Amino acid sequence: MVHAHDPMREDAAAFRRLRYGLGLLGLALPFILALSGRVVDGVVQPTISDVFHTTQRDLLVGGLSAIGVFLMVHRGWRRFPGRWVSPDLIVVLAGMAAMGVAFFPNESTVVATTSQKILGLSRAPVLHYGSALMLYLMMSMTCFLVYAPEADAWERRVYVWSGRVIFASGVMVMVLSGIKNNTQGVLAEIIVAHNLVFWDESIGVWAFSACWLLKAWTDSNRAALRQWSQADGRSDTLMTWLVGGHEPPHPGAGTSRTERFVRASLAALGRLSQAPNPRIRQSATPAQITAQRRHRRVVDQSVTSHRSRKKGPVRRRA
Image (cartoon, rainbow, N blue to C red):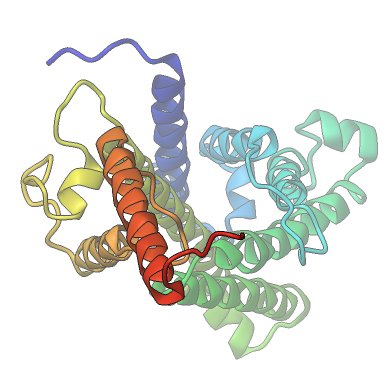
């Protein structure tokens, strides 16, 4: 059956595809930077920020810019009671931080960007590291304060642990970078030789991207559930098959534990709603009203005749 054109549904589907694209881009970006560095330059850079000074600069700036722009324009999370900060503000700050990491390079000896020309070679790295710190902080707060409050059960635990991983990854990036930049010992050589800062930064990005994909997937399932619950030109809707009246609207539906629980709950509610309530006066049909009036007249006549027999014949006054 051909469905009617629904602009709102198409916009929602396009937005979900953008969410999936953002998550997949975050997962793939560290691998792309490492693989391209190995193939083109023969080496993987010690940190993701160091890619800016190689021939893969366009990949880094383009990927971070795409992520930052999407986060900055993303809207849709309400500020529920009990939240001390707006969820939209957290995501916007994360997008601004991603843009800052992209356009403010770290340490360099050559002026290669507009930000370095305006700020100088000494002040641009300060904004770079400040943006990186804010990015990891906002990514972890997104898991803690945006995703986790709206989730439950296993999904909530995934968000909480991902936020912890992102926060720990950001702390370890600062520790490893401090050792790499300020010491000359064996530990600094190990950090550089094995690209520990690069992969530690990647762990935080992967954790955030995985949470974003999980959020997009769960929202997509909820949207599909709402679509099934509407008539949509079909005789079998979600509410009818959930209570056992029809077959599932698509192959394999109704077999998960959650759907079985929802079906059983709605069936129980349906039985409760059909039970008669003695406190509520039920509406009667015209035939029932006529029968009740006839019965009331018969009862009144019988009561009157019984009272007259008890009193005996009426005596007339002389």
